[in-house]
Length: 79
Image 1: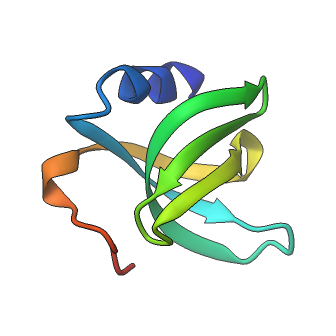
Image 2: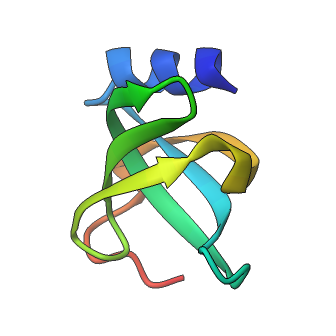
């Protein structure tokens, strides 16, 4: 998964990640994010297009991670 995130980071003008994310309580939500950088080996900082602000994401809480064209999304993204 880190390789996919790194690829999207390097092509941030063109690509975003679409993924399911579980919060600390286990509640799932669908997110569209533009990764900025890794904060550690298990989490990364990204601009959340759904929340319109930077958020940190834990890798173990991410699932169904897919790469999508950034041009297909406009903030705020309703999911």
